[in-house]
Amino acid sequence: MTPVNPDAPVNGTIHVTSAAVTHVGHVRATNEDSHLDQSPVFLVADGMGGHNAGEVASAIAVEEFEKLTLGSTVTVEQLGDALASAAQRIGELGGEAEAGAGTTVALVATMALDGVGYWVVLNLGDSRVYRLSDDIFEQVSVDHSVVQELMDRGELSADEAKVHPYRHMVTRALGAGPESEPDYWLIPAEVGDRMLVCSDGLTGEVDDATIERVLRSPVDVRTVCEDLVQLALAAGGRDNVTVLVVEALDVVGLSGRGNRSDEDTDPNTSVHELDEDTLPRALPGFGGESA
Image 1 (cartoon, one colour):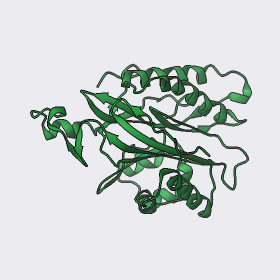
Image 2 (spheres, one colour; image 1 turned 90 degrees about the vertical axis):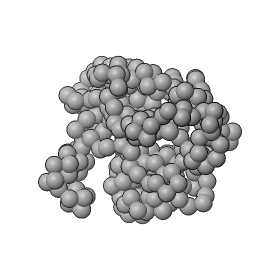
Image 3 (tube, helix red, strand yellow; image 1 turned 45 degrees about the horizontal axis):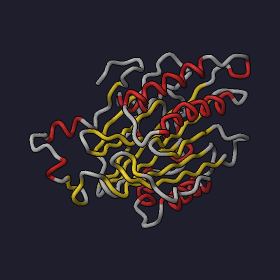
Image 4 (cartoon, helix red, strand yellow; image 1 turned 90 degrees about the horizontal axis):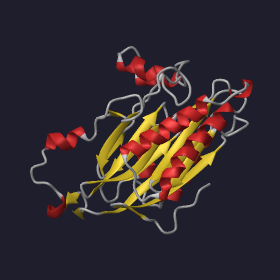
């Protein structure tokens, strides 16, 4: 269990507080989830593979991204480099014990862009990132999974996906499978935003409506994490579960809740340009062209 940061640092232009809680669950013998709760990177990695290979792979992902916590903010290029380094190290794992090692990666990081604070959201696999911002509650990341592809094609309903035999089968992962290009999003940060990063040990047991209710509760982020993990365990706890929540306490460039100050906002910025920030992009330097 990771305590809430006692002195939340200023990350470039976003002042945050965060907490993370992880649990092995009621069924698994080991916890193959790893997480990083250290500004400016907040990450959950859900390992996969036999003979503890998943535990090794997820730990490697954390080690590579932890190198970025020496700075107060990150760039998209740095995230791509860290992901590429982790993929190379996981791919170099030798021996039968590490055969098929891989891990999902889902993260939120803080970035300064033209003096304004942005959330960078990145995912690879089916670990998720959610955003609670004022009246908005949404799943930002898109699952890289068999059932998500079936749903996208209209061949599977959301209720059917919950019980589908392939519901835990991912189509992209770090270090496993032929397709490993992540998606990422840039989202302008607002005071009061709560960003949730979690493994499927939470979302496989707790529905989105319950997750939203807990995120909206007027308690600190550590309590939110503890409550969500307890709900997952009470619902069965059939997988490792890791929950990490980051909350924006202050955002430089904002004159009030949800309003950017005149000196930090380009009056010529169109709504279309802001909408584009929320579209998934290919990660520069990691198997895709620069967005």
